[in-house]
Amino acid sequence: MCDQNRKRRRHRAGICAVGAAALTAVSAGPTRADTPLPEPVVRALDLALADERHALATYEAVLERFGDVRPFVNIARAEQRHIDALLPLYARYGVRVPEDETEVDPATATLDMKGLCQVGVEAEIENVRLYDEELLPTVADYPDIAAVLKRLRDASANNHLQAFQRCVERGGRPGMGQGHGRGKGYGRG
Image (cartoon, rainbow, N blue to C red):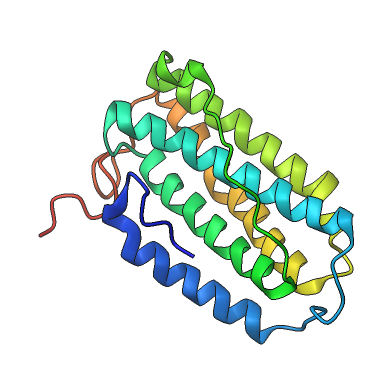
């Protein structure tokens, strides 16, 4: 489930643990895996996965340029957890996981931190819209899938969007909470 070729391996153990917990939670829930998923539901899963992959790749590109700056480092970790929460649904329903064909917007390589945070705001707003208007209505008859997608949507609306908005308000300066803009736990042995 966890790709060992990822560039940012130092957080892999924690990310895999969260993915395993998501697999356990999905496995324990109600199932409709005895019947094939309708094509619109498969497309909804694919769109959710592509959206989460795109967000992760974008935020990792920022981290490669600027180091482990907040809010990008924390949100990149969350995006990987989102991906890890979606993958067990594919396994559960016997659906092929689509190839990762993510391309990062070239503007990511040239924008300053404030501009990148603004891109984050716009991406999270679009993410919430996608979940609310397209994905959640499509999977409504599959409570296990809907529950995962709702958690991902809520993380974007309640956590990621607000973190990027604070970053824009600070003029792009990294967060100064725990980690001083270098990620949670920075400097602790």
